[in-house]
Length: 233
Image (cartoon, rainbow, N blue to C red):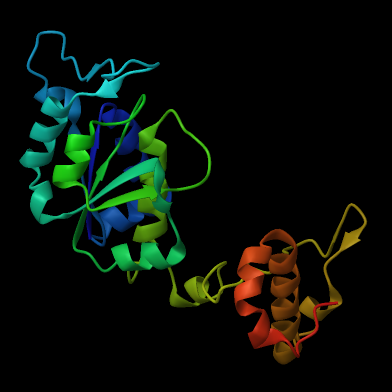
């Protein structure tokens, strides 16, 4: 899997791939990345990449010229091209798994008020929102997508870890504990110390259901019928 990111700030993206799990995946050849600086395709001496929006309004819009040339340089028309934007469809675990099947993904890191619609019409396959809020950095939203996708690639993270994460079965993940057994008067639940795997599994499911019902009633409504006979109190 190769991630190609087009950005005004290549250093932000390069730092991500040089640290932690991402760096290990790159070193092992499981993940590749290309970072393309949009300013490298500007045509004036000031390397201008943005301008005021037609019709007026606050902020600036990325110029289609440099961005279009950058997209052409990586063959975006023949690759799955994703533009993270608050006006896109919600980013989900299911969509991340869909992207993980691709051999290469091109991500456009927007800035300011966004990018020219003509670029979207010509190159973008998916407009995706990582949440109902606005960021100043398109790099952060693009890397959020990268992080959610690359960890699904075989060999990056153990299969057992992936199977027990939030959203894998439509539930939020159960609470986790580690040593010491008592921290500032709070004890680890006894069942987790019992060694009784069936009871531990039941406790974790019950806690997942309780957390999902409390924090994400929208998710709970989808799976409630499957667990109707499994109490959460």
